[in-house]
Image (cartoon, rainbow, N blue to C red; front, side, top):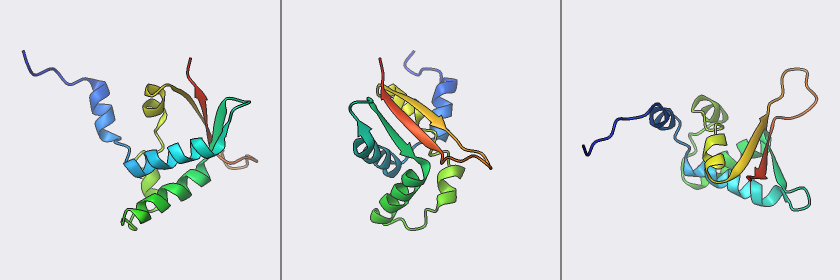
Length: 109
């Protein structure tokens, strides 16, 4: 049997393909925010949105807006980065919270 059955995991990943512009933004911000002493990088959602939009603009796609990032699930990056050896934690703020939403990237074990 050459053809293999599709798995639920494959379907999940098809619906949330993360564009290169998003991965490039995350990689850049990990490099910029890496703290060797703490062995982690903290990336604010605000900074990530700005860099993603900038990357799309540089790629000639100025139609991408902030809303598209959320609508398309492009912040669902945990599985991609955990598959590359990172531990990823997302801390989202709610109305009334006194902090900005952010991701924490730590080296996996």
